[in-house]
Length: 466
Image (cartoon, rainbow, N blue to C red; front, side, top):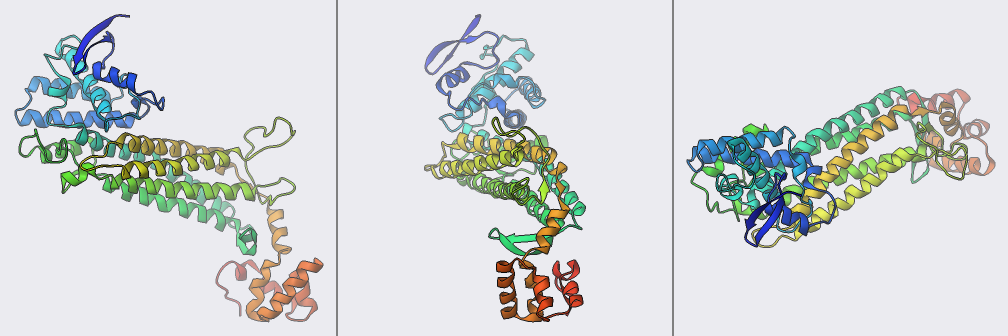
């Protein structure tokens, strides 16, 4: 293999001649082989890093720290990365020591070598344009990396929210489709009172829709960045006015309403916005898992379960039991949710592990947040397209459950009293008679009154019948 020699603090090393990364990236790739997930797995992070570097280059140019030729070459390289080129050159594992330094240097070296090529120089000719002195000018990993993280999470959320919104809309459509189907509601897995299948799906839609707004709110916290704070937030090695200028330029490039943190020292060490965002994802995961549990229960059977709905069959369910079809799509959503919930714990522990002026565990935080967003996006699309859209209702089973339920007697309590209702319910349970038949038999109400009180109009909303 053809190589080129590069030098750093630890000495010389041979780098593949065709690599756009450099020696520090290669060292990191050799040191960290943990998750098997390289930075390239998250294109949003690469795009965000490139935007940070482009904003810094233009700011440094205006402040006379970089000549126009170098700044133009750096911005050219950054635009290539923003457009999706050279992403395979980001080879460092996302889980790494050093608070993200390896990720930052992977970006610095790739950008430097693309820029060198633009200027007509060979890769590794860092005397002409240097990864640290030029690409990383006026920056530290400790402000460039978390700022890029804030942006990348917002980009990933922008990609995820449409999937969540589409899932919500499909649940609403099912709510309308099933609005006429009366069924039994259940509490603690026991018969409760009647509702419609449409109301059940409407509730799913509302609970999912709530978190679309919460994600948007959480993204606003990620718009306050510490770029310009450099090592610990004091702004060492930056000229006066740099922080304000560079964030303004980054806001323009990213189209996100970014602002400098009010206290850069605090912002450099605090992981609160990431913890908050992670909590929102955990909350959503819990809701999606609960909904998936409900779908599995409602479709249980086909002969010995609730059987009120049918999930679309997606694959044979057993290697030994012929004819079995399992609820594999909700099960996969459950497992996705469990991983997101576990990731929230990892984010929490990593955030707590910060010490003094920096949190060295940021790579773990960023990996888990981006991975959770990626998994949730794919899982929501799967659930919508391979499950929710194809759900059908078993109207006869729903009607039979209502007719034979003891729970409907709740609707008669205001008219026959709690004691009579309890006695009738107990008799129905032990004799197998219906509530309706026993009420009429004991002359507690006429058949006409019972029919009116047990009508959907009376049972499914605040009663208009007295």
